[in-house]
Image 1 (tube, rainbow, N blue to C red):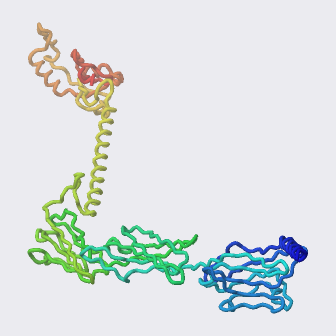
Image 2 (cartoon, rainbow, N blue to C red; image 1 turned 180 degrees about the horizontal axis):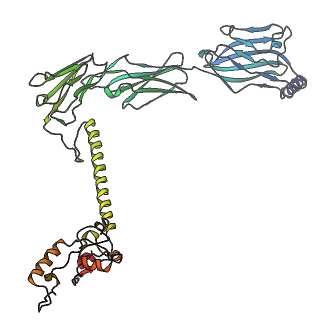
Length: 498
């Protein structure tokens, strides 16, 4: 008995020593998406001397229960069990040979399913070392289906403002669940809901709630779905229908009498567009000179007081009818604005600018002409006075430019009649040294007939002294307040210093 026990102990010791160098190598974890393919690696590290591999078995471990997936046996061959038979195979062909090589028994999963997620065991049965095994965790992901939709194709903004869901973003059947966020300029709020499905996936839904209005029309909503490390975006543009927003344009507060080409236009912002425009005048009918074309009132002819009043425009679309109002008043003259300029038509303004420029140019030319005339007048003056103020002290008024008057030629032989006895008598000289009365009369008459003309002092030297003595009277004395000039004239001291 003691000998038997000793032999068993020896064999057990040898078995432990032989198995100490054997190992099954596997990945700790693997993952893949639904419908994809994944490899589960299993490699046996043998000892030296090697042990004999009797069988390799792949098992699925789920909730503490083992389920055979595939078996490789040197004598019996390879076997894949249902429900994995169509989707699981050994990677290396050597395993499938009649005499298989079982050191590498990696299997390949094709068309992964969510139900494939589990722990998988690769077990080696050897002799005489016994069993060696290892395990890998397989995770199966499900990529979600993401979509974004409008709650209704057409959103209507009602008069009673209330919140409503305008768009929905869904990330369906995802594993793990997604995270949804919104990107938009609209003021609203988002709601979120998660639903766990029987196959282990999660559906996430988010609604965006706003108060529909004219401002929300054509606004963009973007849904951002974050799944693991991926971002999926989808966008929609809101189509909000609303009643017309009406405004009347054209009255600038400066409609005055006789102004031309005035008009009123009814502007309406609406979705859908306005189909009917209706004009009316409160407390009366439209003026007779009004022409209506689409949404515009054209007033023919000049402005009159008849155009004053309250004009109303009703705009109608498929949602409803809204009204615009403007009060028109007529003034006698154009109204000045805050910058103290008159509102006039552009054509009159341009014409006024042109006329003003022309008048300014003429005024400028006139001023230049006056300055030039004054300058030339100044140039005509000298330090000796103005020649236009000369006073002649002798002569008969002929200018020196005209010269002396011509006299008929004197005959060479002059015949004088014999003097009478009376003529031969010596003249009697009075006590005053003058002539007698008859002589004075004769002299006075001769003075009246004496030629009178102007001669410059420089020119007087060219004539016979006797002639000058006969023709000129002695030069009179120049007054103290007079100044003589080089041309024989005199001017006053007052003119001298002008």
